[in-house]
Image (cartoon, rainbow over all chains, first blue to last red; front, side, top):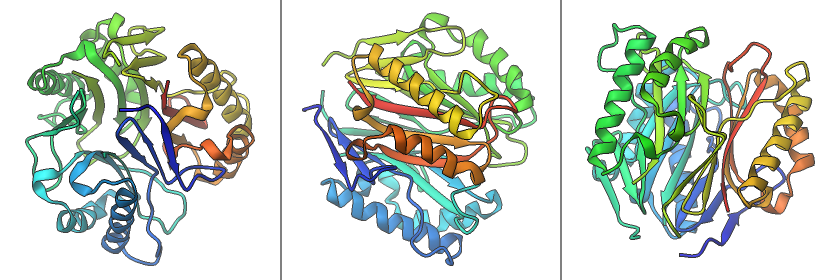
Length: 117
Length: 117
Length: 117
């Protein structure tokens, strides 16, 4: 496996995804529609993760780890609803969920993950 | 080294540990006894990490990085007490400690780490 | 690529950097001068990252991912100013920025990253 680095959509702050040595590093994803609620924002993020993984020749069955930042821990069950509808339980990643204020006041969830190719 | 993915105790939310390409990704660990104080919860977490690493054919001398989330930064010295009693200083990982509200009001510390096999 | 683990400046809590299998895991970096403002602290951290990467035979064009913890999200634009002056936009990493209280009241930013060799 080569150690070549491939960057997807690099800009001056970040790349949406970086591939190296068979591992895909995804940037923290936030929802496209910030007016959606916790479940809606989470579902939007998970669709974006699907698209990014597809661009790297991978899919959600190959996610190795994920950190989920929620703006209000009381809404974690709503995040988990969208997550569990999306995730095949045989392929769930190592995961941590912690509370953190995010990039905008309307952002209630952000997910950063690492996947294999 | 194969790129096969092995998941330890996968459920609908997360796997406790995911192995791929010689790297072990551990889920964020919290203490079993939430009535314990910061030092007690940390010691409990570190015992769980020992057990998970053993299941992956590794041990604490091979931890590469760790993120430690503490619910109250003023209690970081108590976390560090348990950490330093456990850690061989020749094999300490890259580490960051930040404050974050965690999954339950009683959870005062959560640790997520990556290790080599 | 060997799975040997090399630890840079290990102490009883953490190593400043850990290398394994061609990947460099850097500890969360904070500024040397805590009296500096957000932009100054960020610039200080980025200089430290340059130095650590150089010790591992790498450089900032090979950063794969970064998590940036800011103590006050309103100051994120000042962090980004220093970041964008430093970063070659063709080589920007996957990145997430979240708000978290940090190790001391004066610490306004901490950056943890992973790089290829």
